[in-house]
Length: 110
Image: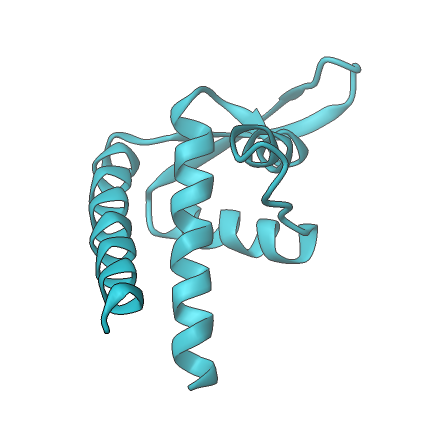
């Protein structure tokens, strides 16, 4: 049971990171801020989850990174979607919509 829950949460985090980066390249802190912003502050991603997620997505080839200087003149690693990542985001969104629809259907069952 715990393993299934972790997989669902991990997949959700992957989708949120991909969605945040679909709006433009960002450094890690900026990705967390963007997810919070686009969810109207309903979702907060902790660094302990965000950075392993970024590394995982980079290993899969869905995002890529390069070092640059942030707005506050700090050296930071910036991430951006790859072409494969854009395709994966579409699949992730479709899967999430199916899962959400099935969950709502189950909750409405009488």
